[in-house]
Image 1 (cartoon, rainbow, N blue to C red):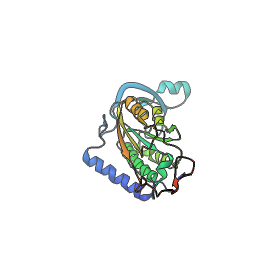
Image 2: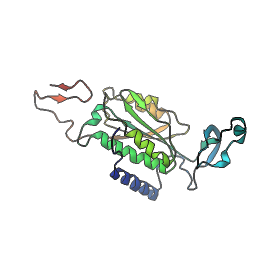
Image 3: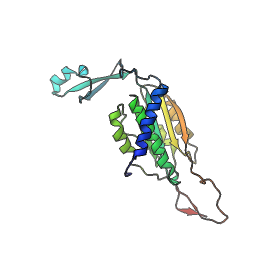
Image 4: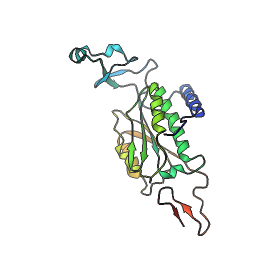
Length: 233
């Protein structure tokens, strides 16, 4: 777990970015909710346990009579859009001072906070060592601390393998996806990027590089490979 993430500066940027978005009309995601909140559609999705803040009008009393548990009916939200914030946490993202990973994680935190603040559904995922790590989708600003905790639990390691994006959950509606990384996948990563688009996402790419990382060393000098086995000459 990364201590102190997000720091105060990142939280300030989250608030400022959210304010800037409201002034500019919000995130460009299809199906932005009405100012009064989400608008329930007609498609029944399932149940969730009742918690303070949920609309009591959606309580299912027939379920309560059978189970003595308060359950709320959920419907597909025709108003909210779907945003996926995806990060590459491979070893090469640890290059730089501060590292490329520290910047990528801060950008992701700002985007996630803005998504939740506008009541869009959020999928956050981290690609590391050939796996896509994704917690359950979130759709409320109160979920921001758990999203920050998830992002703080990774440190860059392993080889870049963007094909793991093929495991991205398929949303019920079209949405927007932002992939943040350095894209140093030896296989190109095209299959993973195409898989994201095939799931109905409009894909935007944010490439991060560190000063001097592509400079050629002196002849015979040692070069550290952050995704391989130590040093090479």
